[in-house]
Amino acid sequence: MKWEIHALRGGLGYWLGEFRHGKLQHPDPTGRFGQRLDVVNGTTLRIKDLELDDGGIYNTRIWFTKTQFQEQRFILTVYEPVPTPQIQHQVESKTPGGCNVTLRCYTPGREELKVSWETWDPHRALGKSVNQYQVSNNGRELRVFSWNSSFNSKFTCLVSNPVDQKRASFDLLSICQSHEGEQYILSFIIQRR
Image 1 (tube, rainbow, N blue to C red):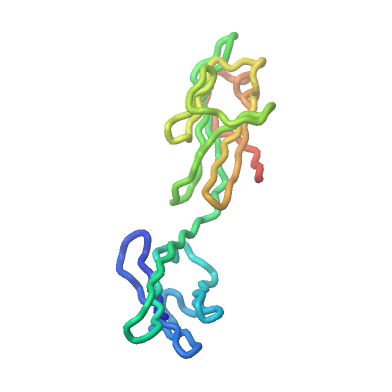
Image 2: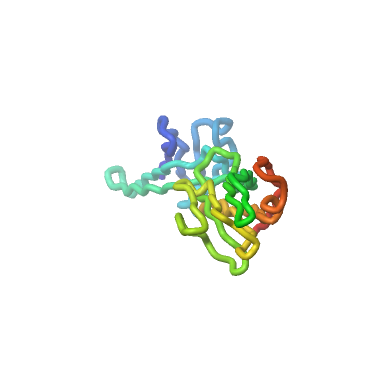
């Protein structure tokens, strides 16, 4: 059985090694994978202590005879833990009848993350565009129109990937009843699910 990897981000293939006579033989035990490779039950390749760059297309070729073989392909994706989001806000305008605010959900990191917004009481997701709210196409900005104290004041930014999620929450009461037109970076409440 022979194993090789092709990185998802491009680049050349890398021969991981072959499993023969009950032992994994690979070309460079001190290389990229070092001692992190192991074969379990004679057929399963195990990579210990996964790293982000370990993601890729793993190919294996299993030889039954000198001329008969079977190939299998596996795709491995490695995700970073989701970074803790922060919410920045800007008061666009304030009148006695309402407050127009833009909230921005910021996350450091290099991977694509899904960003959505929710309100509290009742806890519900916000759509792309409604009369009182508008969510940007990338989900990172939420515009709140004519908010007043009769509406729900708490908003939560949810950032997720397929394996992790984190939240930051903000209450409009803290800015819509304070100094008009100032820009703030808020302190946030982090909640994990």
